[in-house]
Length: 371
Ligand SMILES: Cc1cc2nc3c(=O)[nH]c(=O)nc-3n(C[C@H](O)[C@H](O)[C@H](O)COP(=O)(O)OP(=O)(O)OC[C@H]3O[C@@H](n4cnc5c(N)ncnc54)[C@H](O)[C@@H]3O)c2cc1C
Image 1: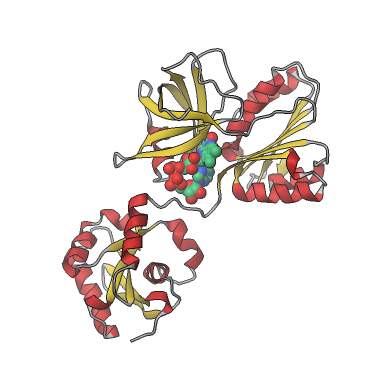
Image 2: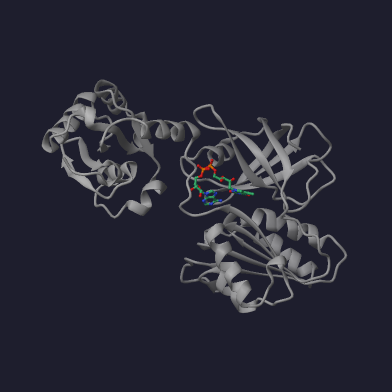
């Protein structure tokens, strides 16, 4: 349902490094009312007070009570997952949902659940729900993680396997220690080895794994109609906040044929920043009026020296997340990468110019001509 609903946090525990399982209780109904595999859209409060809406799969099967769980990986310095990791018992939260079509309709075909990381939330809920039903089909869980320490909930899987002979699981680690006796590598290699054309496949987690799994399943003759996907994220994909996106769009309308990329030490003064930019511009023969905008790393956004310097020069600053810079990070230095990414250009007018606390590079807008 799209009307915001209310729930209260009743508990939470860190189940693996960077992964927290949080228990909530709905306040507006007798139960959350989901089908196993569905998600909620949580209205999370970011550190700056703004509300961000993010999807979280319900990690518990449907129950006859108001409680439900989510299982969330913390992404360093990111708003919603940071909120879920910090939220204290007793806090009220809003959400909408349940949403989603990652639910099992078929009751007979063998079911294969494939998850990476926190993809275990919705696949785990489906597993619990399925095994509560008096069915005879086989259920297989393939779960891919990095390290031994990332594995959680193992006692429960062992218990389910002991109770239900139709259930089995395999955990694959991509970076196991020498003592790991299970499968190594990618979970999709395990899937490739055992895929059968007549199975039903539920894939959840990392988008790259899901693309790879679809490929493996197609090679095994599994029709696309037998595959359901829940893509949590695609590596390298970044959610740039709306305000930053709007500011960037406005900058594209500004005059100016050059972008100043800047990297600075924490605490660098406005004077140092202005001096470094002016030196760099002097070396290129450009004026500050030739500059469309400055580009800096997101982590520099609370550097008052940069903010003041930009105001002094009358230039806006664009802030970039690390993942936005990855593709262009071939440049040896951060300021060069920042200038080139903001300019959408490979053409550097001035490579890294270094002063004690600030480095500056200048790129030509849209690969425009050097002066
Ligand atoms: C249908 C659906 C269900 C989801 N269910 C869950 C869930 O049960 N548990 C969960 O932890 N997340 C889940 N997610 C991801 C979640 O919605 C957020 O994207 C995530 O928590 C990051 O939000 P953020 O605001 O902290 O960071 P953002 O700024 O939104 O994202 C920062 C970066 O984190 C990456 N990222 C997002 N999720 C993950 C992840 N799980 N592991 C590694 N990197 C990630 C993104 O690609 C992006 O580059 C789900 C997503 C969808 C679409």
